[in-house]
Length: 171
Image 1: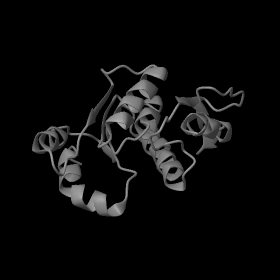
Image 2: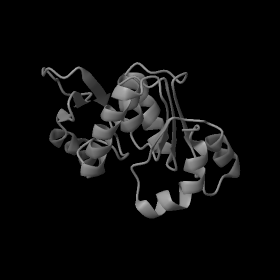
Image 3: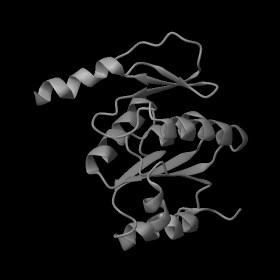
Image 4: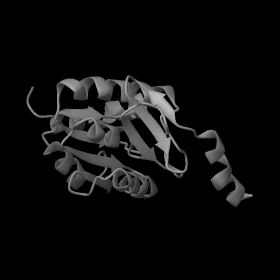
């Protein structure tokens, strides 16, 4: 039954501690640990719970990078649930521009950002494909961001590499 599947997976998504100070807390769960960077998350049908090894590794690197680069501007390419961009904001980023090819993921990412207290002024998410939409590619290239987060398959990153490189500020 589709309804059962839509809700039953939630019983397996519990608060998850990652890195030195991050915890991913499902919105329907309680967390009483001592981590101070608590991310409220409801991934819905999008990718990004922190349970996959690549997501956890990305979160650890975001935590490390943000410790030495506060106020960074961030591009979250293939944002899914918004987990990486929201973590960057919670750890001191000044803004996140998030992109996903799935409209549902974009909506979920926006909802998760709002659940964590981030408005569209600091967490902007759009739907599109930078390899197919030249206007979106131009927008991304003009960002001048400090960090690109892209927890997606390597062949897609390789195709987007020129756009991603152009999105970065000097240095």
